[in-house]
Image (cartoon, rainbow, N blue to C red; front, side):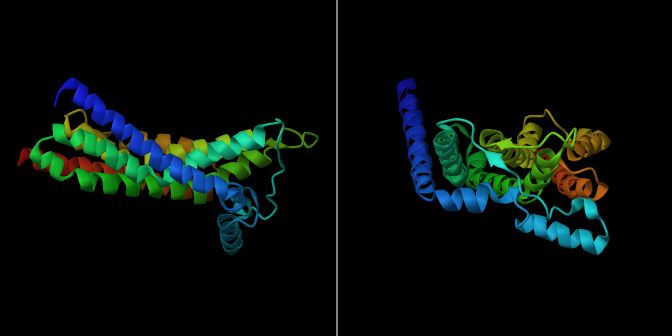
Length: 259
């Protein structure tokens, strides 16, 4: 293919991805109550499933700090067009999250002709694994990290005379950024796979720096969770498990290259 043919393929790839994302975004826009009341704003209430489960677990373990039975944030809008623009923004985000596998598949279809036959054979599997890891990270963040973060930051007070009134844009940006960042972090095994493939990372290097990674994860967990050890452990264990999975992926590709 010529340079202009490649550009044409790229244009159609972007166009198909946009159509898919926008189509889902329109559906999300028309289901405002479901998207906002049942999904986006749900972690800000004490009735959210994670908050209720943590309360039950806290009573059983006698750890009162993880119980969020009084969490009901007062979220306000301070801009004339704030709610409408937020509605548009969340609809597009929903379209991207749900359409992520399709977008990823389109990217792979564009890149695949440049790969060797053996590498191209695994492209569909890579798309499936990447999508699964992304959704796992999004769900893990939404059902655990987001409620803990909202509870800690939304109820934190420097003084009893200073009341917390959370703006809608601030709440939305926190939920979206935390959810997306963890979803991307869960792509770590795929990233390590390719870094090992090109020789930038080795299993020995990752095992050697495991202790530093543990310290980083503990610091991140301490920042985003309430000030109790149990919540910190709830976040640390899955993230370290993800790091161990990345070491396994690195070892596997290194073993294959040696053979």
